[in-house]
Length: 94
Image (spheres, rainbow, N blue to C red):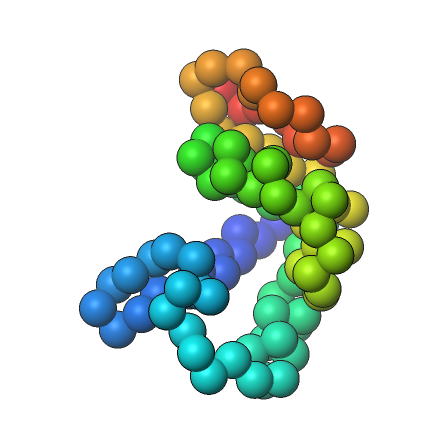
């Protein structure tokens, strides 16, 4: 059986936006934790809104360690409509 891993960055007041907008003390420990989490994943589930945002950024990004991971891992996009942006290894899941 496979595991579902949720990696979500939230502020104490429940802000779930781009962490660069509100996390100011990012250090190597944050990136080490991210690496530990993504090293265990072989597929990614994305909501449609996240896919639409990420598909315009990550395919050409060199921000590591995430760019290599997300561009080399199949993305399963939960959506009721066809995907309108190309992104290798992305599949719509109805």
